[in-house]
Length: 454
Image (cartoon, rainbow, N blue to C red; front, side, top):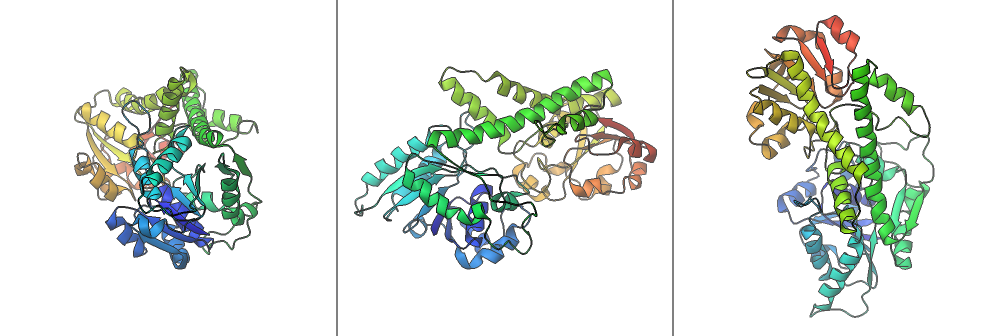
């Protein structure tokens, strides 16, 4: 099938490259010429393990351009995967989606094209995009005869750092449209993944337990709500673990054991029960905020979702409070933060807990030192005010520190020879922001071990 993907961020690029790998003829359009040039050269503008390898394997079916007129004509499916940042009131800013829809409408020429909202958009956006498409198409002086199109929703459930596996070996695929023909087209498009009949990438073999992938084929509004409901539930689960963690610390219980005992219940499961400094990234914060804003349009409140957001924000403050409780005075203290990206295996800094923690420490008069094995380059560009605090090496970060906080559980940090650094610190205090270090081992080495919920 001929596919167009609008936008080459995490979602758009992963979608386009994966579909090209499956054998579809894919053209990705992005208005950023520098990004397009980089992709044409086989280089990935984002850090995502395996993406450049998949780019190489899919190259014969993949084109990058800045022109809608090159990308859209003849396409069976057009995925719109542009950014939808939060507006000041919490609702998604849809100007990029509007612009993309208008540009797509002015280039449509196929007998039937499915225009797919791949971006996370509010419930009802499918109808809104459909109206924009039809209004914009009607204004074309060169409007061709016999062109038909329909809008569908195909939400993504990608984890940054694991995006390729989540695309090729997903838990489920959700498609929604009020047009039956659209659902048939998307069913055909995803059939190799649904049936797992494709030859896996050389670097990412098919999991042994991979079976046929469930397909949820539903109406437009339901597909849109599935995405928000799923992300909000995962955010709730993490915040619940963190809230229980604070009680565990008060009563003398071990939150990691409590979470393990809970997770073994098949009705609950162990994933997303890890306590720590809370969630970040582009999805949970934005989507929970948008869900609350959407509900308010219908005079509904979302008190559980609001509570999850409050607990998450509180976790970042608790990390600073734990340091203050231990060091008594933060003014003039030197604090090192290990990890800047919001999670391992990505360089994404959006809503990263490390940013709030660093700024809070600076506001209290502390001196900070920062390190990340992957995200430092992006950090310099996106956080120029904090960039001077970057440490070139881990040794430099530990030197003369009064405390070090493990913020992002990069494998590089977990595999450190921690005994090598204890002598470099002024006060060998370690705050485990992710509950991933062995407390007894750290104490034997010579550290004063602290944790957010211990």
